[in-house]
Image (tube, rainbow, N blue to C red; front, side):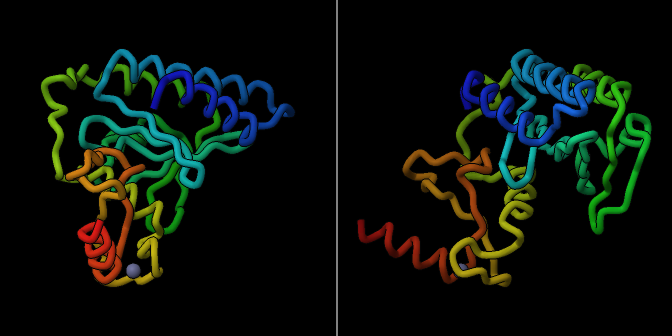
Length: 201
Ligand SMILES: [Zn+2]
């Protein structure tokens, strides 16, 4: 995604999610977003991804760092068992809470946001030009993310069994493996149907 588009989307997102009533928190959130963008520009290993339903997500190399949802006076950080932030999350965030099978934190102070930015700043700078060879393999963080986003159901028929990860634009036609926007959950039946159709083109 181009930086300009992303910034516009983010501003729109912030305006929707935060409130004028809580000016201070809104400006902390906006600052935080800009810092994230600076970070991802300086370190190509860091990826910031936004999806309407899921919120903002940070990835580093092949791993998810955390998933975040923004609210009027706070944001929520969700962690999966193998997310990078797990090891240090208790040092960064003050308020853990139980959100079902996720480990989660409610973040509502500037100090916590700064500590998170500090953590991200210290991640080793990755030069992608040497590691970004195109690959059919779907990275773990993309799978995790898509599984969540698609609610563990086939996108076509809603089946919950025999699921697989499908390249929306086929890999053979230039489709990406390392971005959730090109990956979806399909059941084997629907996947076969899709492959049949493609074969007929
Ligand atoms: Zn299906």
